[in-house]
Amino acid sequence: MFYGQIVHVSDPGKIQIFCPDLTPVTYAPAYGDRFIINVPGYSPISFRSRFSYSILIHPSGIDLTSPDRVLEALSKTMKLSKAAAESLRGLDEHQFWNSIRLYKLARKLPEVDISESTYRLFLKLGAAKLEVLKELHALDHVPHKILFSAMLTFLIRVKDPAGQSVNPRYKRDLIDVSRRLKNVNSVVIRYLKSERAYSDFVWFILSLGK
Image 1 (cartoon, rainbow, N blue to C red):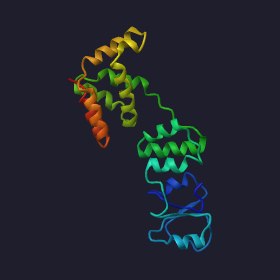
Image 2: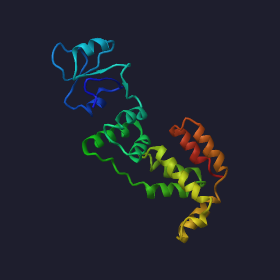
Image 3: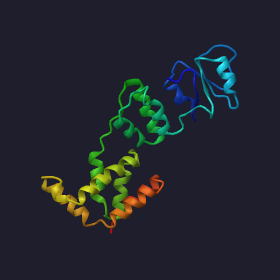
Image 4: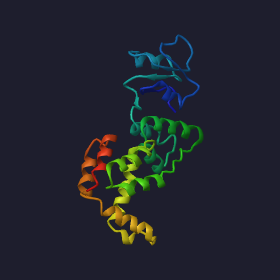
């Protein structure tokens, strides 16, 4: 996949996910051609003249420093579906690379069932802040981008409780939560205009209440 290439990445171990037969080294080998060479200042020209199978880590190489860059580089070779790529974008760096590793080995992504937990968080929107934070803490293993997407779905349903489900209890839940919410549109817009860090998400969740 990346054999014989120059790549820009923060950790040689991430490249080793795709090229497990290569050995990370911090020197320029005098012989052999199965290395991930991490030598600051090593010339790409010298690398290309000497190696054809090894990989050089260098700022001028293929940019793998962000999830979007990684997914762009891998979209053809790993044949990720759009749905799979979107689910990976929502992960933090550690979860992202663990998922990439699993997908490379088994061609599957980790499954996380968060429907019940996110619904409990939704039911607390607009309630006492301590109650909201308690439910949010229970979901600290879930990327906040995924949580925001789930909350946004619920908030859309809140606008028309009657048309969402034949389940009376679900309708009642939507109505009860809607009565506690305020300025939903402006809060959502402000979050979308922010850097969307975790602290911004916490602000978003707490700002929906009256």
